[in-house]
Amino acid sequence: MVELNAAQKEALESDAQNVVITAPAGSGKTLCLISAVIEYRHKHLDEVIDVITYTRAATAELRDRLAEQHVLDVNISTIHVWARERLKELAVMYKFEVKVLEQEDIMLILRQLIERAHATKMKPEILYSYVTGNKKMDVTDGYAQTLDYLDKMYIAYKRNNGLYDFTDYPLYLLTMLKKYNEKIVNTDALFVDELQDVDDEQRQLFELVCARKKFYIGDAWQCQPAGTLIRL
Image (cartoon, rainbow, N blue to C red; front, side, top):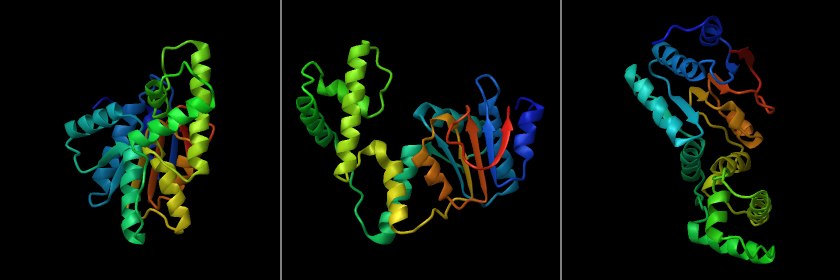
C-alpha cells in the first residue's frame, strides 16, 4: 500500500477508544480508513468489525480494496443495510414484527400529499425518487422547492403515524433500542466513513454501539461525536 503521512499514521496508532478524523478531499481519507481497518484486523483476529458507508459504490470499493490486502472477514455495508440487520436481530429478541412501507404504500401517501398541497404539476414518480434519496435532481428552483416542501410533509406524515420506509432503518433501530433499553453489543470495532453525512439520529445510534474501538472519518461535521480529534 501507499506510504502513510504523519497525520494518517497518528490516526492509525491512536489507542483512544473513539477516534474522529476530519479529512477534506484529497487528504487520503479512503487510504486512512482502509489502513485503519487492516491494522485493527491484524491486531484483533477474532473480533467483529463493522464498516459503515453511505453509498453502495463506496461499499463495493472498500470491499474490493480490503480484499486486495487479503482482509475478507469484515462486515461492510451501507448505514441502512447495517441498521436493518441489527433491527432484525432485535425483533427476534423481543418478538416484534419489522414493518416498513412498500413502494405502493409510499406512492399512495405521496399522491394524497400532492393533492392536499394542490401541487398539480408534481409527478408522483419524481416525488417518490426524491423522498427515497435522490435529492440531486436537475430541476428548476421552483420545482425543487415544491419537492422539498412535499418531502417535509411526507416525513411529518410518517412520524405522526408511526410509519417507516426503508430510508428510516437507522431511526427505526434507534427507536426500538430506546424502547427496550438495549444497546448493540455484537460489534467489537466500528468504522464509519463519510462523517459529514451522519445525522444526529445516526450519531445517537452509534453511541449505543458497545465497541472497544470506534473510528469516524470524513469532512468536518456539526454533530461531531465525542473522541480524540485528528485532522488529516
